[in-house]
Image 1 (cartoon, rainbow, N blue to C red):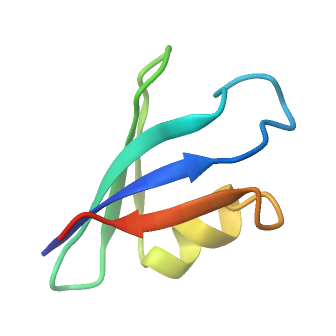
Image 2 (image 1 turned 135 degrees about the horizontal axis):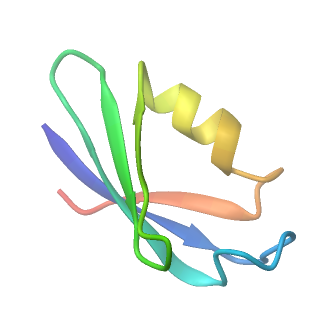
Length: 68
């Protein structure tokens, strides 16, 4: 299991803001879960970390940084 944060450099939609916008965990099965740090504080469950990146990277404007 590894923890990560999503860091948004530029917010194209005006919804999530910039900086650290979400925390996440990748489980040993490959399943990834993210928790948004701003309202509405939603959670998302994805089959793979690659799915998280493809949905939320916004053409490189959001970076994934592992914590451990």
